[in-house]
Length: 172
Image 1 (tube, helix red, strand yellow):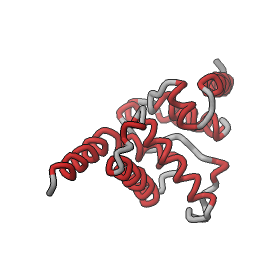
Image 2 (cartoon, one colour):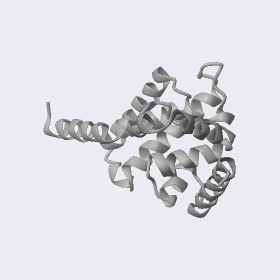
Image 3 (cartoon, one colour):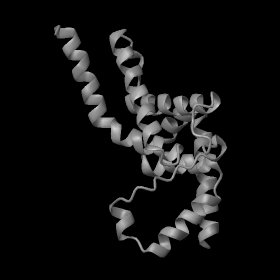
């Protein structure tokens, strides 16, 4: 194996190690837990990254994590447009709550979890996606804006409105 090829493979392996889990969680939330399609979308994003590396265009990517999440989101939208998603998938209702239990979920009271899920369901799809990116993925507004192709200010307004609606739902 050539030295260049080995360096490319190592760069891709490192990107997969750092970002695969986060990307899978995000894509699964968009696809309502469809594991197979989610994995295909994430692998598509990594294939696109490998192509960028091979064509020496990697330096044009300012923030790798955001770029990968954007590629994933665009791929899901493309699959929805071309009807290559399961019939039950409705892109207008993209749900961004990851239903996979984590340490926090296990500690929370079941009643609180149900209440949160009910309140999240009352948010618009755009608000749910903002909450997912801001809270679960811990992205900044400018990063969210880049992924969603909106301004950072618009991302902040959407998050503010989502928090306002969640508070209203919780009666706070």
